[in-house]
Image 1 (cartoon, rainbow, N blue to C red):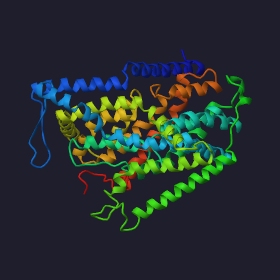
Image 2: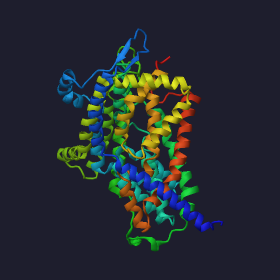
Image 3: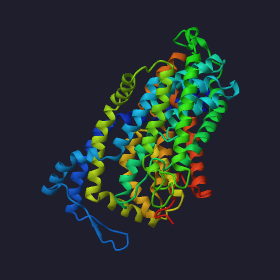
Image 4: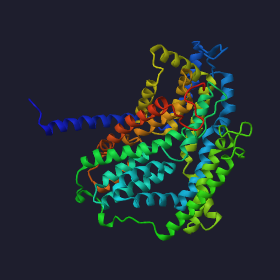
Length: 522
């Protein structure tokens, strides 16, 4: 008996729904990331005792290297080391300070209204033919302050699409794809760059104690990826998602669409943006004066180069300044910030949102430290590298497998820092032993970590996006949302991975300033 087209479609939907239900069920089985790191830290301590008892070792592949043995933390000496190192593990965790300092500046720019005004101005002033690309592009660059992208841009894009007679969910999907699936790409170095670079550095130090990965490590590749994501997001929106959604029926809305108004930038906000732009240009000119001349004071004093210079080592300071000063200028002009108290309140509010992150860092820092102390990370890396060499998986194809693996794990563990804190101590030394640099490995991870954000209910803002979608289409469910966003994930993971392979192995371009492709650098 043959199925009718309606029955076939129903079977596909039920199968797809079962798959989504399975993903959601498995994700819900995972404990909170903070609990996960606490359990991992305990497991490392117990595992070190077990591995030490059974004499687990590895041969150090470095010149003159001997046998690497497991250091047992499940004894008196291990307990003493844990007790005395608990605080310093936390305070010395590299990403902690860098992220907090960068967010102080972002907090000023956000509280003053500068970031919101920039997004509104970019999207609302775009010609109708370029609205889609402007929405996706704005979404990508908004990840410097992720909450604004989700909270401001996604609802704004839905409203703009509806005002143009287009399906509002197409606008929502376009913005969501840029903000979340293009999370790592950006024209500027943002808060995620020092966060991941700090974790990468600590992982690289398991093999090379002197190796340092800067916040600028992936800047070239991620800046170029910004335009790629904007083009791919526009293609998927206009050629796949919007035609599939069809003509919008206003009766499906749960809100009064006539009350949905889009506030254009008023004269005061426009004047504030001009003032902020002027402040930024002055800062850029002053910064260029310190690094462009051969004798610039922020160049490396011993070599005269930008590589390993105070400028690159202190990039987080410049992130803080380039957000804080234009943000204050904008706030001063628009009368949102009238005194130093307003600036202090903005920075305080920014820090108050970081409570969960600080708690997560405490436990993540213990896990990373314990992993390094026990030598388990190095032993896993050596044995894993030998396994990959034995099966012949050491060429560029390895990165395609790595990206897809990260994308799959991201379905259940959506935090970029949490996933990288687990992956980095294992894969960074392992792939370094095969001959690839930590900077390139980190760039590949960022692709996998981004592209599946939009199709997992585990993503922290997924519920918010679903709530916005329900305003315009009352029967929108989790399955509907994921089915709508799945084409973006499929196109992004294929297109972005191909771009990575072309950039790194085809054109042999560095992923960032001074970032080698291979380790050790030729």
